[in-house]
Image 1 (spheres, rainbow, N blue to C red):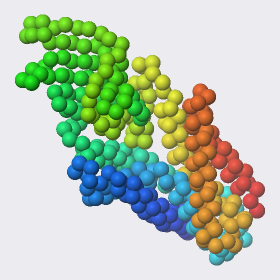
Image 2 (image 1 turned 30 degrees about the vertical axis):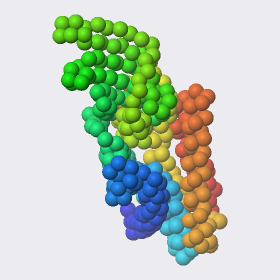
Image 3 (image 1 turned 90 degrees about the horizontal axis):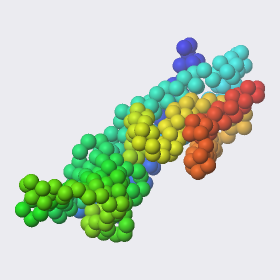
Image 4 (image 1 turned 180 degrees about the horizontal axis):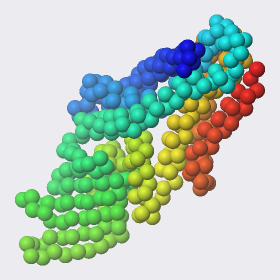
Length: 356
């Protein structure tokens, strides 16, 4: 890298860092405000809410990096264009594509940071924050493993191993004890769902009843009802949230669903979309070039910021629409995941090619 490359590279990174600082401050503020209704429930305090907000900052950084990279590139390169530095660079014989090289390298650096955030920091801290919040709000809660949870409810102990992010949870074991703490029965169900407040429905239940020390009876039922004070929010800790999984964990979970002949479309779309968004960070930094060499060259910083936010929100909305539509119509998950990024990449490269 020569002096010009390092200058452009550093400019994009500095302004992207500034943009991310502002976005994360706003995101953390909104998260903290959303916790106010939970403060005072159980032992959940304002300090716990602040810690919950802080632990979720890496997840927000992972989600906001494409927008931050776009705003940073528009702001940084826009200031260079407004100061005629890019004009002088072009006049000295440096092509637009040559200018795109350090800009794209800055985007690649941000993409690698995003990858590290999503694989090694955000999921672990997000899951920890979720568990700490719920354990503060609920009593008699303990945990086992990364995808399992135990809860004591009177003379019952319920174990939930896996689930989806709705009101249905799978891999359920229910241990019932008598007044002398003798194990009376064990129920195993394929999944458990909320029937109505205070009532749960167990589906495809196999029961082992311990009559005495020498006799065990077994029975099977399609459905069974259970009255409980267990909060569905607690069982949500055992649910598999794609946002709190690493790419490797997400791939493993998809493989688990396939081996059990379960629906995988939503998770596959999220898997491919997450990979595509890593490449999208590089694309959106390059997207700034046609703007700063054209219509935004003489505009102010405020205008460039607004346009960056609007483009980022538009990308987010288009991505969500395509993902939801692809799942609804049963389209190929890889196609659905890559389509928004591929479309933006095509438009960006066409726009750069036409830049004079």
